Length: 194
Image (cartoon, rainbow, N blue to C red; front, top):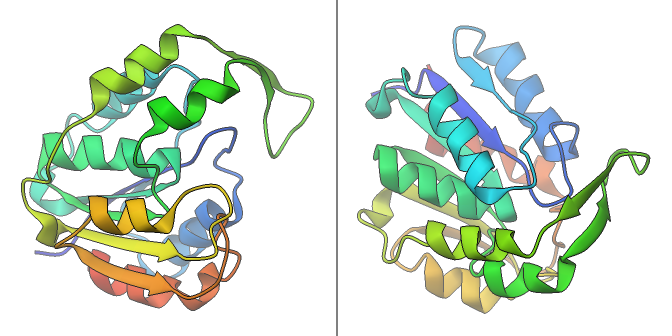
């Protein structure tokens, strides 16, 4: 069944202005104009981010929706896919953000606009723990693009977390997937957009 609704979830300190988000938006606009596309600016609160996304996609047909998530957005995308039973593409997804982001508590700046500040609160770690969803109900609904050259997250943890899913393991690359243009065709093939 073709995908008619596509959600993109950016990573920590990122935004809808990320290179990957803009690349996906441009591809959807050029080749899949009938697809409903949404890439919201996520709030710093994990609970707030998931609430925003679930509310914003509540009337989307689960069998015709898909989600792409990068880094922390990959963790969120997994939460959404498990709750909605939809397809998900994960780009260097965070596996244990509660552990990893515990070092980021405090004042933060937005990656694409350093003039924008937000405070990452200690309570957000518990919110991340509460969103952990265990084993994947159907690994076949997932496609993970994982870079061995990721300088932020451990590629081995990502590969293990998404065992059984379709995985594109890149020998080099980096956390931002600077070579995303070389992966985008396979991502869109998996998404099967209308």
